[in-house]
Image 1 (cartoon, one colour):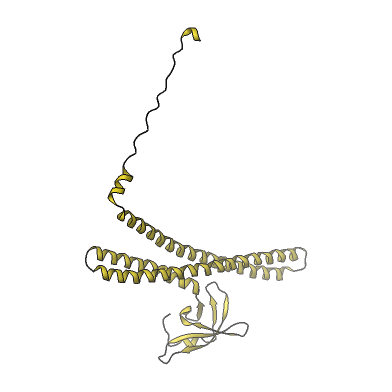
Image 2 (cartoon, one colour):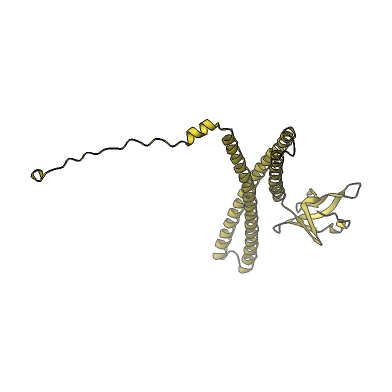
Length: 246
């Protein structure tokens, strides 16, 4: 988030998440000695205070939006994992072209491989978090649908007049819309991250297969590729039957 010297002008402004839910109001900021805005203090609706890093907040004039931390982490991993893999491939090409020594290649390759393994572990952890959030959205949708059914029943039997019914119906529908948008966002994020991991796993499998193939002795390769001898033909003897045998 770009640092704005007038961020204190957003004090008292509402903070909403990406789906329009009110998170709270900006109460103040934590500012480092060099003038960098490190965090925002948020007053929640319950009266409790929450401290959020400013990089998770988007300031657009009078609007302050809390960005999804899970989506931000996933987007970063989707950039980092392919980039690190491409760097490792470039390193492999350099050693094949004799532009760097084998010793230097091994050292840097091990470094890249270790970092890639760490990123994949983080990605799996994020996918688990996303699964939990998707399950939460599904449960919230279920509860909202139950609320809608009960509202319809009470309205049908005349316990709730049209005015209150309309207001309640609008609230439930708006929350259903928000949770469905959030669930779709989470599923798209999960699919993108899963595809990145699947692609890396496939690349690793292909590399291992090529490595085994390269290390296979020529004699074995010739033996395995030699066609098998055909089986001996089957001779069928047919006994001719004369007319008298019919």
